[in-house]
Each structure stands twice: as structure tokens, then as C-alpha cells.
Image (cartoon, rainbow, N blue to C red; front, side, top):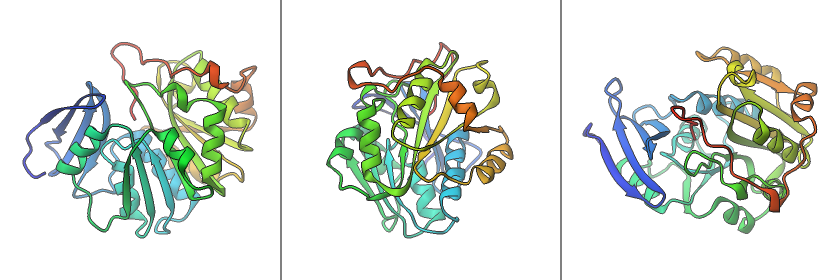
Length: 281
């Protein structure tokens, strides 16, 4: 889409808007019901505007050197920012994007089309249902970035869901979950306990004000069986314009405390952001 004209369209799960960035020629912000969802620059797909997206990029670069293709599954599509990024920085990657909102997918692919040779396959489906039907051991990285009404849906927070993610990952694969919470971190602690019941290695990436409970915000949980280069990840996230810290080991065990893995019957959506704030995903 070359004309810098805002677009508003009703999609399956709300009202989507594409807003042009006047400072970058063909860059667009996607909002859903007023909440920022994605930012994409069609002329520079390697540009990651949102801090959480930049941190996911750092995680990918600790999983494998930049340029090496990866098999990626993206749960949640938005404006397809991260798939475009991976296709640009890791040519030859095989990517599956699972987005439940068919109308949103239509809007994005119509107005912000993917390059024909990007190696990105789009699936209009529920994230958990798609994973349950997928063959095992197919992905190097699964990125969980599903928000409905600014909240992570309940059925994507349980122990059964975490085991399904693990089944689709390869033995050395990595799961990255974008979660939003604030003090006292009841939801986040439950998610950490749930993932710790399935994966041996966990790390948490977040900005210090979020970790200290001073504000609600996005966190990234990195889960795997073999671990990642956390020293390299810490250096990358600390060097960003909005620095983030990486917590692991004893720090995470203290944060988890007495939280238990989330059973299916106890699963709840993530908390809504306080009035006047937004989680991004």
C-alpha cells in the first residue's frame, strides 16, 4: 500500500486500523480496538519498532547466528512483523503463521502484502488447535504472541498447552512467550511454574520497572530443554534504547515461589492492562 491514508476495517475480533508513519515512507502501525498490535516497514522489514519485537529478534540471534535459516511457528500474526523480519534476516527460513482472525489476515495481506518468495505460510486457525494437529518435532522456535482484547486467551495458558508446544518443538527448540502482567505477578508466576513443569531451562526478559512491579508491561519467557546463550542475550537487551534485563535460575525460582502449574480447569486469561495502558502483541 503506497498511499499514506489511514484504513479502518471491521475484522473478526474487533476493529482494525492501519495508520501510516509520517516519518518512514511505507511504515504502518496496526491497532486492534485501539490497542497497538504491530508495526511494519515494508521498505525495511528488518526494522523492529516495538521493544518486545526487538527482544524477540535478539532471542532468535542467540538461538542461531543471523543469516542461518530456521523453522519458525508464529502463534498470532498481527501485521506479520516478525515473519517478515525473519524472512529478511534469515533467508530460506520456513515459517508458519497461525492467526485466528481471518478478517485481520485478509486486511494485512491485501494492504501490506508479503513478498511472493518469503517462505511464509499463513493459517487461519486457533493456535492451540493448529498445534494439536501439527506433526511433532517440526519447529526450531515457536513464538507465542496471541492476544485477544489485550489478553492472552485462557486456553493458551495451561499445562496441556505447554506440553503441546513441547511436542511440536524439536529437542533443541525454543519457545518464546509474550506475556503481559503487573505486580503481584499472579498470572506471570503461574505461567513460569507451568513452563517449568515442561522445560528444564527458563529465562525472563523484561524492563526493570516491570520487574520491580512499578508498572504493567510485556515480558518474554524463553523456555527450552537445553538453554540458550543468556550472557549474549543479556548484552543485547541491555544495549537497547529501552534496556531490559534477563532473569533466570535462582531469581526465577524466587519469583515463582509457591505458584503451581496451571491445570486446564483453572486456566484464566491474562489480566487486562490498567486503564490508559496497553500490552503489545
